[in-house]
Length: 474
Ligand SMILES: [Zn+2]
Image 1: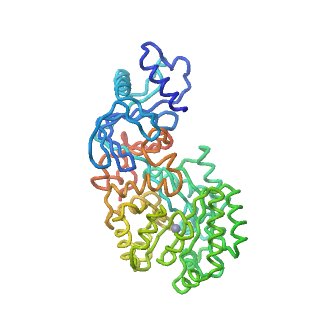
Image 2: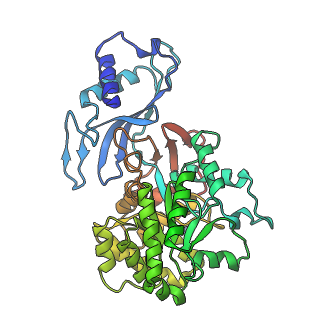
Image 3: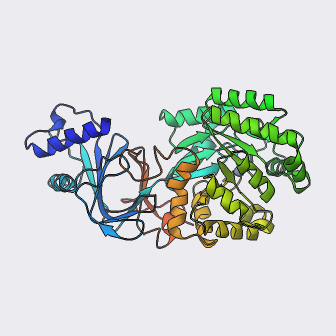
């Protein structure tokens, strides 16, 4: 209702010459008006030419002519009801645009006018900011690469956060981090003390006691890097409930369980009734706390078990072997479970699994009901942000269409982590987390390597228009 009220006020303002909001409220933050933008909505539709108005961190309106439906048909409407039913009528937006043009294209220094800036995006593409659902922000490998001890100082973390933003990643979900530290970092970004993408936290990854060493633990052990406080073994259903309760009380945004056991211990996990009871208790408690829960899996039987137990998402999925049949595809589709393949980690560290990982993704992506999402598993020496875009390109190389990959990185990723009512699409009422590109990523996904502008929560955080500089390419 707040937005409807705002819209009525705004329409009134436009229809009454001489009335200016600016005279009574000089402190309001500037609106941003993007015009002539080709807009990728994130949900499969595009606007071929639109005016997008940003106010107070959110998308106030989108008006378009014409509007292209997901099936490719074109139509135009004076009142296009968006998901919130609040889109600005075409004529109102047109008059808004004309009004703005009178003012020059720069933010108006005239205090009698409402502060605003108009940015002409002719020939450019505007799309939702990228959501990477699988990173490791506080990471002892990269944080100690030039030293011998774990360095909890913020400098490396701050550098990584900036790199994500520069590459158009406006939300990350970070897992396997020391709990207090990642909460502190998330809250610093939230309050504006630290620059960076929105962070969703998981804290330590949970493992099931006695089911063998996880792949993640093995990677760290091989590199003799102690990773303190980044995983927690659960010994019983009661322990599961207490641990998830504690994490929720501390303020995590989601729960994550590592089920990437070594091959030898895999049957133990699938066949042990007690392990399943523990997992069930973790899932149920997470949902009781209102948190999504995802799992690392690499084996098909474990992936199927995780879905049957109610997990909301799989990271990696099935990579150790080729899918044996269509069961996984059907259960992912039926239960709306997200699948974040993380191909890059195989290219870098486990090339022997790359082919199965790629082909399994290709097969699953052929089924429209399966929600494939972007999760880069960025850690170690992988470059934050850049690795996210490289992952997206690998998903396309594995067989996904660029359009499907863009949706995997935006709307579908937002659904996967439970924030699709706030961000992940260019729709009225959503947070203004968006990026501007010179080229069209639907034509070539590599367009994402060349970012012109990044807007996070209505604020332009990266602007490469003037300098001509770009974040590290490819
Ligand atoms: Zn990971």
